[in-house]
Structures are given as structure tokens and as C-alpha cells.
Length: 42
Image (tube, rainbow, N blue to C red):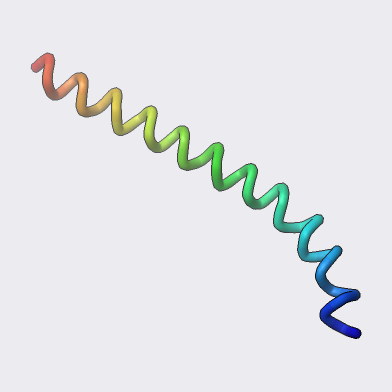
């Protein structure tokens, strides 16, 4: 029973965390691509 009660709460908490993690990963990828491209140009 506790797991059934906890699962909806964890789902509601996990969604924003997953979104923020995805945004951070995309930002890191963009910065890494910019750094690699600038290194290639130099």
C-alpha cells in the first residue's frame, strides 16, 4: 500500500526534475558544440 500511495507523488516530482535535467543537458551540449566549433576555427 505505501508504494501505491508514494508512486503518484514521486511521479509529480520526477516530471519537473526530468525537464530541468533535459534543459541542462541541452545547454551543456550547445556550449560544448560552441566550444568545439570555436576551437576548430582557431
